[in-house]
Length: 287
Image (cartoon, rainbow, N blue to C red; front, side, top):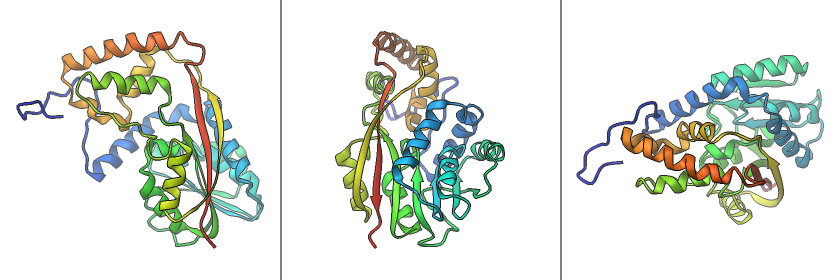
């Protein structure tokens, strides 16, 4: 963010670099998820979240499924069990690190009807039109531009095909909301990454605009594992959704951190501090 005199602020130490062009965005996103890959598949709530999305989708044997932003393949594995040997699941992700972990989990599962492709889940270059019966996206909407993703997934689905995605409620998790509130005190207008699809109304509007017929949104609450204030800070400050934080000077970054740690420490004393309201959203491409 430019200072009032038009100059660029000095980047604070240890903070991620910004950039608005698509190439930089992809590199930043890939690097972020490569760094998270080793521990991602071991978080039990992620597995349960993926399994619930697939379960509510009612997948049947023989279906061909695309798992967009597959990560370590948790939803892909759940889908593979649902569609059986006569079905096929293709998982795509931009992160090579995540796909390495997905391959490891796939080998351990013994399933043979899953394959993974390193690709942009919002473009799907190299995939034929109307190639899939179902498109899944579990936990990925936090990092994807909804309108771009829905357009690609609409193209990839057969007529009558099903779109299934999970979405955190807008304004959650609460610790991230506090982070954005504190950022405003330092001149940063950080956007809630769930603003596009984080309510029933916004998700309905977004899928309808993309040409889908909205069917339902199933609410749920996930209890996230507790984390310390310092760990939450470290997670937010490297989050690619908040790259603007890199524009702060070292002094501003230190003041921001101190303010956030004080604010979020109060939040962590509340019993529901780590409750995460979510939705499982289902829509269909017209026949």
